[in-house]
Image 1 (cartoon, protein in one colour):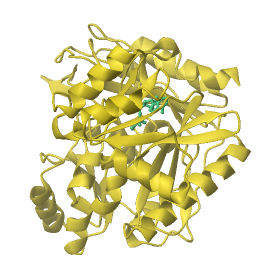
Image 2 (cartoon, rainbow, N blue to C red):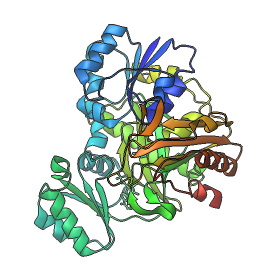
Image 3 (tube, helix red, strand yellow):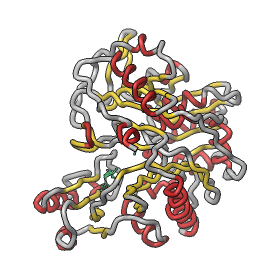
Length: 423
Ligand code: AMP
Ligand code: GLY
């Protein structure tokens, strides 16, 4: 079978890496891909939002399975379009991907179906929004309703900052149309975890637990990013918490989406806040997390292709996932300036050294190739991912890889996985 993966980040490199290991697969394509992906798959120069171009390519090449990485094409309806043309495609349909594309929709769904989440209200006018702000304590959380590339959530520490943020978003200055409605919600304390599951709309098969590191600097300081590193398993997700999340978050959400006439098929990602035995849902994503996907897929023992196919075909009742009894840690190496404006084109050295390291794989995210050399070409540049018998061993291996790689102005967190060690 020929498989097409859509996207160009570390998540898609991990998907291509895992899919290419399947005996069912004869060839992998990736649109648009990146130079790391290009070592295992054929890159197709089509953008993720070029739906007609991607459809034409899949039909022409006889693609047996398309796997959609990022949220943008999902929210544009790529799955609906491919299915209308008889193609098998892994991902949420447009009306189901709305659970990520609109935070207001996701919050209202959670409220309606009893999914635990922070107290909130949705606003499109400044006056009432500020009145509600004043009923909540500080800090307070303000979220742009629409897609904002992971940057639409502001945790305001002062009333002035909260008022300015709400005013900026609702007047269209920040995030354009995505900020024309805002969710204002109570600030939650605790430890975050990423809980992902495959679902066909009825059956739910959870992946191993994972934890992301959203803040740019050590000890969770500085502005939020797309994710500076991740590990799996996440000990904060104890067996008791796991069962609670399956029942109160996943089951209620999947059933709720079906009841709303938006059956959810694909991978459903719940961002959780865990405080003792209390769980609250921060958000849903309609896709694999990035970087969570990298450590998760390194730990996945099962062939992923039958799982993706069964999900695309709408019946995962016989799917079982097997995991390596190891920990995996991914450290993201970022470009100078990220998550603000960052530089591009800096030469990356050391990748030939890491190629020889055991139980380590360097997933490319924002790289380009210039005269046969790898250079930086995005905010998150590489995801250095390693396995270990213990979290400690996986951390040490990943950071040994990081130490071998360099470019001008590179930065990364030095504490990825530390919370797992603390438990
Ligand atoms: P979201 O995109 O909704 O997951 O928000 C991005 C990040 O903002 C989360 O991963 C949390 O770190 C933080 N966050 C979101 N909502 C809250 C909340 N209610 N309380 C505390 N932190 C939050
Ligand atoms: N790592 C968080 C996300 O993929 O949204």
